[in-house]
Length: 119
Image (cartoon, rainbow, N blue to C red; front, top):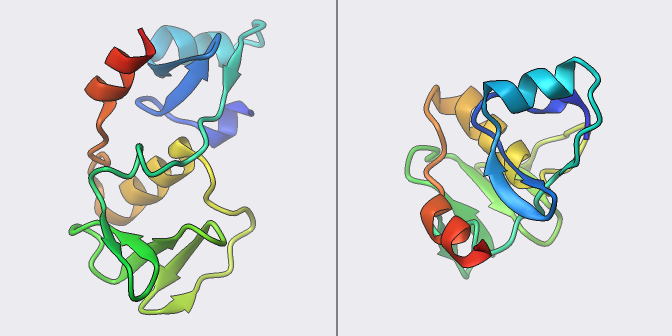
């Protein structure tokens, strides 16, 4: 995982537990300190705030009315057509970043439940 892939507020694994990237963690990463951050694979548990459309086999969020995530191909779909991406959206922080770029808001995720179950 590279520093240019993440931003403040992204959720990643640190030593195997989900954490929110705060300023000290991000500064450590940017300053070249040895850190143990790993991306978190997207699972249905992380997509609990999304609506699943069984007919289209896609997850969508109300704030992204024309956009959806195709879980089979880890692709973002726009009105049923695939968007060419340089990297698939397979991790939580990638979906968070896409959502923020498209809406200017943070992606609502079930973080409290995830952190509680990881304890």
